[in-house]
Length: 316
Ligand SMILES: NC(=O)CC[C@H](N)C(=O)O
Image (cartoon, rainbow, N blue to C red; front, side, top):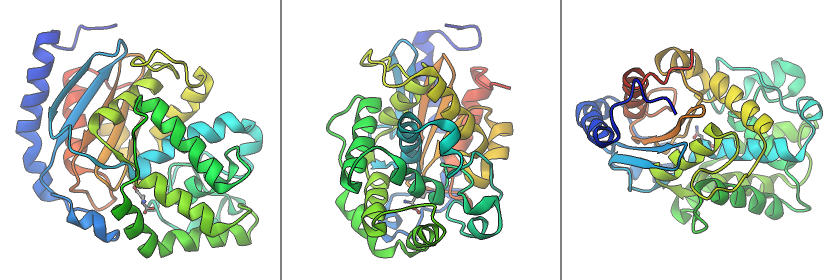
């Protein structure tokens, strides 16, 4: 493992604590998501970070133990499963790997571009379509398969859905309903749309900590092997495709700026989490529920930008 740009292990902890201290003020410049009413109750000034190295060592600071809902970071796990369960060439006939300049819940491209295919699996339309393509006779089986992969990637079998967030999103998720019913009308998805959406809402509502996100990212950093449990969960080719699409699409229409500012495959969620992968070195999980206008954690982004500079993690 390269160590040249990182402080000694003893100093890493202190460095993360210093970063939290110097970056917490950024949380005052963002806003918690309110379109899912339950998320509007989050404390905006939280900021946490966890790092999981390729040998499984972990370093954490700030509010890293505070639970939050995984939201769109779950799309990474769904994408892993859909890649494992489908031939790549066939899959891309339904969901492509193109970036987008529109918001994460945009509907416009489904009609005007790309033969009705969702642009990628990191935005809402693509994730909803992906769940339908995961192996399983029923939506419940597909949901359980994705949840099991999330548990395997975090190494935590006790991961659970936050019932209040799930119900809140289910009550107010009309945009996602519109996306799903539209995709059913164009033949992109088949099956029971309400059950499919229910699986999507539940997957977004799973409660995690920064450490869970860091460990998941470390699995991708280690090409599918968990440095925490030692288990191989998927193959290197799958990990490579996921990291490529995270790099170009993981922060939605902010992906280009994130590539310039941070330079790592990343994935955000409106619960305030961001997952970042430093290939072969480490996985990083940050959390700060105050978001920028594109739905990315503002404090989390700034933290990652500084860490990437300080530890020379930019892959470009
Ligand atoms: N960007 C996000 O995290 C979006 C996920 C959220 N559950 C939604 O569907 O709107």
